[in-house]
Every structure is written in C-alpha cells, then in structure tokens.
Image 1 (spheres, rainbow over the protein chains, first blue to last red):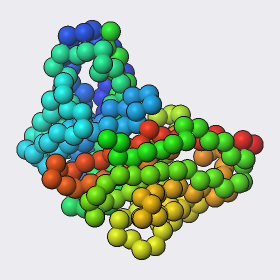
Image 2: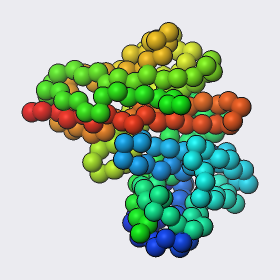
Image 3: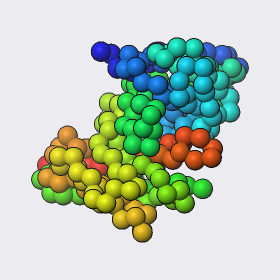
Image 4: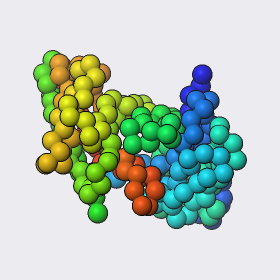
Length: 115
Length: 116
C-alpha cells in the first residue's frame, strides 16, 4: 500500500499562475484534508472532505478550491497564485467516523514557491 | 485566538534522560481529541500519541506518555529515555467537532535536540 501520495514534491509558480496539487490515498479513508505549514505557524487546515462530494472549509481557505469526486483523490487548486501561498502543503487522511480520536496519516508534502 | 499553545520553541535533552514538551489548549467544547506528532528533518508527520477529553487515564505509547491535566487544559508530552533519533519538531494538536464543522488545530511546534 502506498498510503497517502502527493504530487508534485516541489513546484515553483509565478504570481497569477494556477495549478493543482494532487493527493491520492489507498487506505479507503472517508476523511481527507489539506494543510499548509509555514515557519513558526505550525500546520493550518485549508479544506477538508468527509466523503466523496462533500467538502468544507478549514481555518485558512481563501485562495484555494477543492473537490472530491472519488474516495481516493482530493486535489487542491490554486486559482491565482500569490507569494503569500509559498508554503509546504500536506494532505492527510483519517477515518471520518471517529474524527475526534482518529490518527491522521500524512502525505510527504509539496513544497510550493510563488515568485 | 490560539487554540493550541506550545511555549517552548526549542529544547535540549541529554541522551537517555526524560524530557517534557509543554502544550496547553483552549476550547469550551466538552468533546475533543489531543494528539502529538513528530516531524523529523525529512519532513514527514508521524503520529505519536492520542488522548481523548473523556479519558480518565493518561495515554502511553512505548516511551511516550501524555500528561493530561484537564482542569489546567494542558497535554504535555513526556519522552522517557531520549534517543538521538528523537531529535525532531514536535507538534501538539487538537480535534474539535463543533458548529463550524470538523476542525484540526496544531501548535507552532517545539524543536527537540537530543545531545549525545
């Protein structure tokens, strides 16, 4: 099992460009989420999904879109990249039925730089 | 408002000694989960330990234990018999399932260095 995979590992964008960060899991988990990690800020929740067709906002959703058409995939879209979106992005999964106590499984991260 | 506070940006511990990493949290919800994650320099996030808000006993996982003091809203991580491989960033986190949906809050982390 691959667990949680993210592509690409590294990306450089120019301001105003768009791109999609990919996240896929083979753990059959209902719950998937996206975080960004900035120096000195810890991880902050961007968007999450409790199942196919259902998404919701986290703490810092502005500038990002998500959709969940399958259990396995949860892409994160940057519509018009800004330097403030330079960060490391983590995708994570867990079993939705026990959200409060569920361990999160993280992908390896995508390091994004916006110039 | 900060939901999770980790006041120790950096900590040092001698190999084989025990170390406590501090974490305080802020919520009025009666139901929540508390977690600790480790992030080595390679960047991946590794789950260490979980404590539920209704759990009466402190959680333990091998050399890790969580000192849960509900009245003080603290959830400190204790690592016993430190090893060189314990050098990493450590994040305290909390899950909430409230009116605004499922939320997951992380602290800013503590960098632990184990000295040989």
